[in-house]
Amino acid sequence: MKKMDISPWILILFCLYLFPIVGNNFKLFSYYILYLIPLFYFIYYYKRFLYYIKKELKYVIITVGGTFILLGLSIIVPVLHGTGDFSYIETVTAVFRRYIVYVFLMMIILQTRKGKNPLKQFLFYWSLASSLYVFVSLVMFLVPAVREGWQWIWNFDEYNRLQTYGYGARFGWAGFSNFRETIKCSLSLVFLFYLYFDKKKGESFVTAPAYLVMTGLNLLGNMFYGRSGVVVFAVVFLTAIIIYRKVTPYSATFVFFLGLTVVNIILIISQFNLSVHDWIDWVSTPFINLIKTGSFQNYSADHLLHDMIFYPGLKTLLIGDGMYTVNGNLYYMDTDSGFMRQILFWGIVPTVFSYFLTLYPLLTMVKRKEWKFPLMLFLCFVLYEFKGEVYYDMLPLFFVLAYLYLYDLKLKIRGKKRNTKKYLVSES
Image (cartoon, rainbow, N blue to C red; front, side):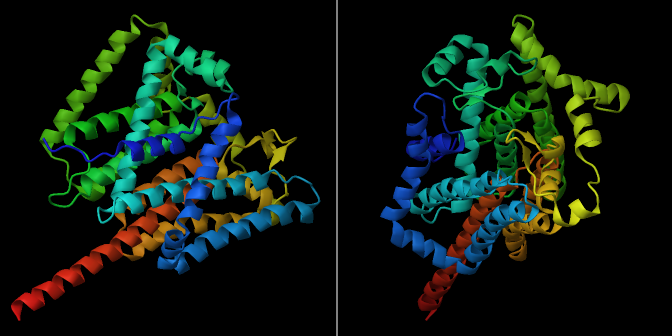
């Protein structure tokens, strides 16, 4: 069996920056690690940093420059409406914070994995880090003493929410895990589908057993941190099957029986562990309802569809209300839906602009005749943005993924030209 080429220190960086440890204890130290180290890295390697910017200058200007426009609008809109609600600035500045983290990880890949398909290297380390995070969550779920000890060291917020029905597994080294961690697991599944289905002849980033384990762990993460991730998984998986058409009857049968075995093992464990039993009941209830009644009959989904998505009125639709939160706590008009939050705050035009910036990197890939991977990313984005605001995380991530794709494309073109020259020289 061919071994996977894994750099431990790169993996550690992906683990720490994708799932940062920010508890009430040592909080300032955590933020130093999260943001100051990348900034110092950019300064130390400023020539290389500028080189990467110049490499795709137009692409960088459109994407990053557009984010500055969003920042300006987040300040101007409340002023024009006279609401004094500047809480949306935090959402837009989150885009810049994600830029820092993702560009830092991108540079690590470009600097250390030269000429080794940087895009797929990035996807591989992301997926592996996410898999490890879910594995640690599993250990902490099954061994509460480990979880208690970790909580004692860091003192995370919302720890008491683990006592809520179905929430017992929502804990990892980053503390209480919820919507963000679910998204990262779903993205990992998209990345793994791409790595598996789109591999070229002789290319191997993940061995077959490791691929199954990583896929299983990230699916489990979707079931741990938020059931919406299971729906996203189903949609993206079916899409991958259709567009790649590489699944054989043998592989489908193997995966089916492997999944059946894992489910049976979990069910057996649940007979001896009350927390596991409650978690299984929480995860399975909406899907059992779907089979029995044709409807999820899930409070969260029903509340989203019937109460959080609505027609806000023509004036609000056009220019927004300049309100994002109420007393800096609850979202304006009690909506969790991402596109509704934006429309209520600044109207349809800035909302469309923010989505253009988010999808522009994917369109850039499509223009270079890579449409399957962007399609899966697009579906993942749309489904999550429908439930909650995720564009501020997806925008910088898509920016990095498309940049790596463009960079890798130029490396391959340059390599082909070099090989052509060698061939012509040898012929002459």
